[in-house]
Length: 305
Image 1 (cartoon, rainbow, N blue to C red):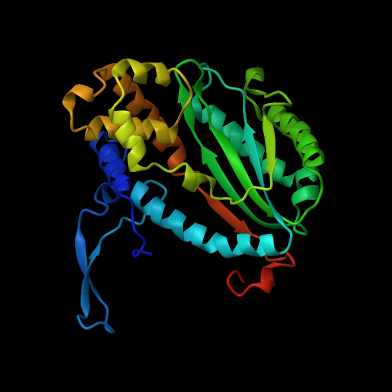
Image 2: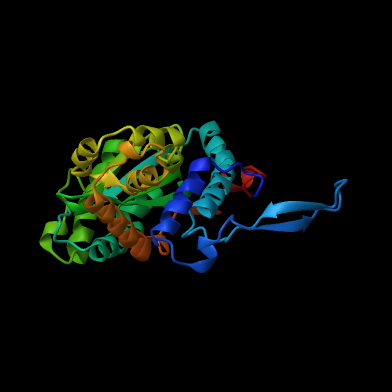
């Protein structure tokens, strides 16, 4: 797995999170800062220098990238198999209503419990049961805004051979989602309406949603060019966890001191929000891939069986 090339910005993210004590685990803080000699007998030189990784992908942006890449490589032949057999990838997005009065822990707990119940419900099993579902990839995401507070939500990527219409599946799951959240919500203003709590997208070209949202150097460079006022205006809108990290990295890596956002309160808030995410989310929820060995396609490819 270590032969995977790690983007430079992943190291910058790690440095920023360590610098602000957002990452606190000693081993994670030291990830990729030391070397060790590894024996490779079949080479001319039997020893190679190897970077020491912390192997804590739930907390480390470097090791999480390595693990995610490994997962994507594992998933690719499964996606190819689906495409060859007239299957589809469905993207189910699930969310709650939220405002500044809701704590992050309440929101993420209600969201997680509700998703577990939805997966056990009759409508979900009807369309995504063992007969039709080849794989499911669960991905939680976080966002925050000054006006509406925390906004955790989830994406369920489902590889399926079910040919029911999008409208039929979505209508059934929308109703079920509202019912389930109504039972779990700690307050009525968490309960979403039928239109916004659950949405379904069918026929995606690929399930690698998280990969296309990953940070890159261009994002960081562009953030460095923004004025403090522009940054403040954008911060009033919903900002994803990736955006918040980008802004923190931008602040730390800006070569030109005059281009740095001169607002300590803003940076302090970013740090506070990220600490909340890391303490209550990162160690519990990450990408999770489940393969259905009972699906008729599972044993048709040696790459996935």
